Image (cartoon, rainbow, N blue to C red):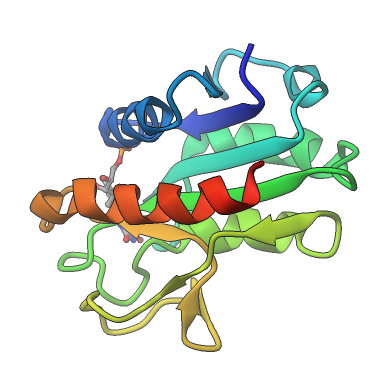
Length: 166
Ligand SMILES: Cc1cc2nc3c(=O)[nH]c(=O)nc-3n(C[C@H](O)[C@H](O)[C@H](O)COP(=O)(O)O)c2cc1C
């Protein structure tokens, strides 16, 4: 068992693929869970959590994560450190880009230590609730338009998380 749990929800497979890519970069320290298949008790032994979801509707959270979120937000997260990533489409949904991360963020803010915010430089979008004070509250990934940037983006993010997840 690793020290990090990656909890993802994916409707079309993009978030799952990114979650696997992130897990690989942690060299065996991270275990992958699809929130469709688990109860919240799974998180108990882990100090570090990474939450990943795609954005659906207009700025909504992926369906499986939406079902999982109420129990997750009620769990004891006080001693945990949490990072968030979200998939989005910055061209077709330029005014709600990657907002799934903000739904998760808002549900747990104040209950746990949230890390892994990302500067919004290098992203093109009209508007998003996912940016607070100039930074995304987690890592946005756009597999629809910028898949060629994904490896570099997750690589840089995981390098930062490795300094925190010790
Ligand atoms: C019905 C629908 C609604 C979407 N709404 C948004 C949105 O509001 N904001 C956004 O950034 N992306 C939105 N997207 C894009 C998805 O988040 C993106 O394609 C993502 O890579 C899908 O990941 P998945 O395959 O893990 O579900 C939407 C996609 C669909 C199909």
